[in-house]
Image 1 (spheres, protein in one colour):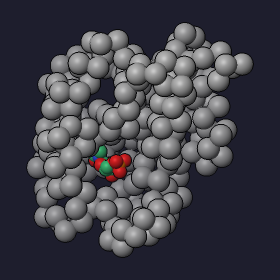
Image 2 (tube, rainbow, N blue to C red):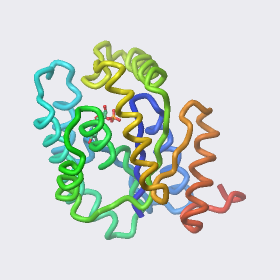
Image 3 (spheres, rainbow, N blue to C red):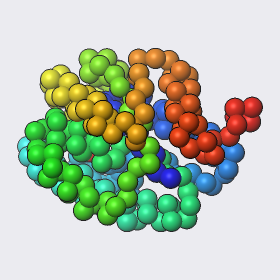
Length: 219
Ligand code: TMP
């Protein structure tokens, strides 16, 4: 079972990934894996620091794309595929839809080309469920910048420094992707309280995959 979490900066998806992972692990220790893109493999962690470094201002869209794809290909081969083969539930903080939303809708690269390149990177590995935490770009960015300040990351990340219009396009891109595949996507309102969002995730998973989560009286 592969579950991905998607959304714009500051939407709260990393918190929700962790809550879901903790819930599954509480009932079946060792049965879940929580990972992320970029940065889920050793190579990926190096690529992540290049990708998020705000001083890398001159990166062209295609170079950026290939770094994300390189991260994904290695992550799939080294981490995701073995875990799925071992029967674990893999939860990923961002996956292929982020490339379509950011590099496609955000940067303007051709969506069909991106889908083919994603396929090359993942070799048929597809999410069973994708949770999209939707949030207006203004709110997400404000939250992300506040979080960076709290963590004393005084610099903005490379993406947080993008114009608001870029983040609007990314948000609309995610919503369009979700509308095209309503069976795979679960869309939740990221402006709700985190407990409310998590209740929506449990409900959505329970409806689709009744055996994955513990019964409510055990949770
Ligand atoms: P994170 O901060 O959620 O870990 O994501 C890192 C940044 O990378 C975020 O701004 C979104 C961006 N990103 C892409 O542009 N394309 C991708 O394929 C992925 C996985 C992330």
